[in-house]
Image (tube, rainbow, N blue to C red; front, top):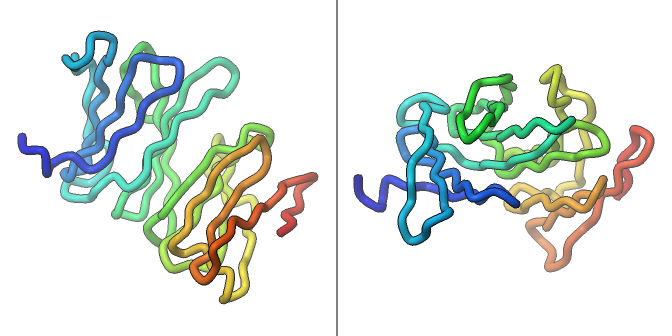
Length: 176
């Protein structure tokens, strides 16, 4: 395999694990305890062959560890991570490529920014259902932005501006 096969890396906080996504839609998990040597402990075809894994995020719910991946095939998949092995948990079909996603602990939801969309959509982790949508005006569209997390707050970087806008989630309402 050449270096061009690798698309993205994601380190699991507090663990000696590294998740690597490949151009062919698969992901591999490596143990990083003896760097610079990597021991591959798991690999799986995460998305359709030839569809890049765009984003990788990990989170914990009730002591269980999960990994979320999104791909160019317009799907978001949630995986259960057990002892370094990855098992399929849930799929969320979306309408476009997800640019960025973040897990919101207090709400047990995943917030997603879509490519060329003027909104953030919030999906329930366990049901996979769309719970909320937050729309932006054209001048604050987060299409090329990213999400970041601080408890129940998201930050987005609008295309036209050089500042971070914060969205506070509270009691089912979004405020910008």
